[in-house]
Image 1 (cartoon, one colour):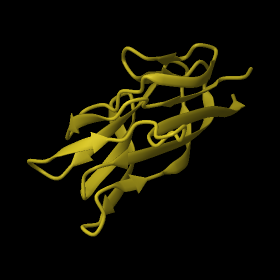
Image 2 (cartoon, rainbow, N blue to C red; image 1 turned 60 degrees about the horizontal axis):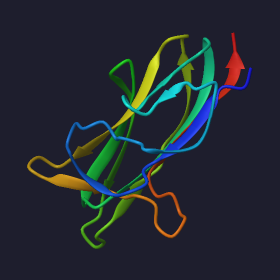
Image 3 (cartoon, rainbow, N blue to C red; image 1 turned 120 degrees about the vertical axis):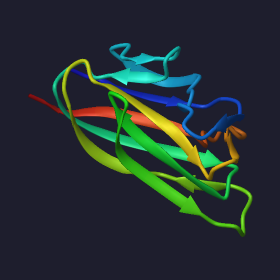
Image 4 (cartoon, helix red, strand yellow; image 1 turned 30 degrees about the vertical axis):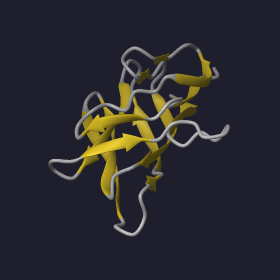
Length: 136
C-alpha cells in the first residue's frame, strides 16, 4: 500500500508558540490521510514511517515539535541572532499505529511570535513529508 503525503505552507503567516503549523498546500496525499482542516496526518496502517519536516521561521529562537497523538516525539531547535530567518529540518523514522495522528507545532521564545515562511518563487520553505516504509 502506498501511504504518504507531502504538504506545505503556501503563504507565510504569523504563529504563536504552541500553535500547530497549518499546512494549506498539497503536493500529494496517497490515500487521503492528511486532513488540511486539522493539519494532521493519520497513519492508515501500523508500521514504520519516514517523517521529514522543514520549518522556515522568522524568529531567531525557534523550534518545531513533531507530535504523535499530541505528544512530542522529536524537537528541532535553532538559534541565530545574525540572520532574520532560520530553518530546522528533522528527519526520523517513527513507529506509528493505525489511527495515530501526526502534527508539527511551532515553538518560539516566550513573548515572541514567529513568521512561518510560505512558498517563495516555487520553493516550498515550510513543509512536511510522511512516507510509509514498512507495514506490520
